[in-house]
Image (tube, rainbow, N blue to C red; front, side, top):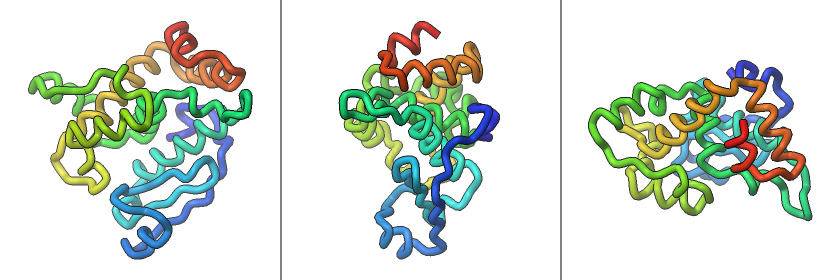
Length: 188
């Protein structure tokens, strides 16, 4: 899945897979099914021992590895909006709970969804996750609609369908070299 989007894998995260919730909590887990710990480690709960969850977390590691350039003392990942980071992970992982079909259900049912412009920082993302009920996503509640993740996935999916792998790699190279994400994203 990751190579389908990136063309190759440059990250080599250590994968810590817990068979018990106690193990997961002891390693700093919590409610999530999985956690990306930078570009070097992925932590999976017993609820996250699935291909989509592993792929989602690995996508975060791959993104960080590919744009990990220091710019004025700050790593460039901070210039990537959270909606893009999460949306790309949603698309790469093909997580059924965040699919385009879920997005279509949200639109058809006229369920309120956040504006992508309101999901830029991690703080804004976390606020929306609480506001729109996506907090249960960490628990993998069956049948629940996760509006925030589906919104980000929809936005990235639309863009990726237009620009493909070449556009994605071009965007990441631009961001790595210090160009503004929003300008590069819209210019693709």
